[in-house]
Length: 246
Image (cartoon, rainbow, N blue to C red; front, top):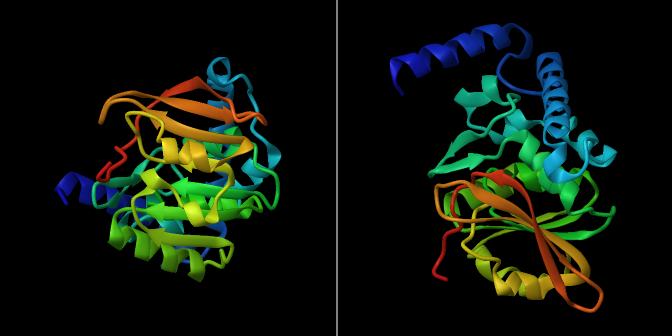
């Protein structure tokens, strides 16, 4: 860690420590989380010409206001957990910007009790948001240390409806299919055919598609009751690449 980053981290802790101590979900974290929610609402209004709406579903925003994001970031980055930006979580991966998490959760249009597949568990934050919305979540992470840590974290925080495993998400989770929704949190060069196959008729998938480490397009993919697939671009985004042997 360079000196400038160390100073920034220490300053963040000095501002936060008197109220939050070493962990938990005290008043300072709760207040910061509500500030994050307001930032998401502002971004939704700013991008309404892309996404076709200025307000996200109330269940999405309630979940964003409940899930303790600071529990899903490395300890030294906790002072920045509720800033509306991605943060590094190790192994070259990030926890997504809160606005993007909210947007993807909104776009899939999940009903309570719906079954959702997430590709790219990361720290487990997106899975926790979906579970907080009442979904039954199946999540896959290809990086073994991240996947195992996320599974433990989700269990510790009480997200019992999340089933996690380590594997190549390109091929989905066939034994648990079909899914009402699929959320892909890494950029692919194309929409994986196995995921289309595992999407239930009437279901939705959100996936960033484009070149590695460049601006991609967030796609909303819908399968109608007849099995026909329609996709449309929603927003320019930047995600880490979907990896694997495909």
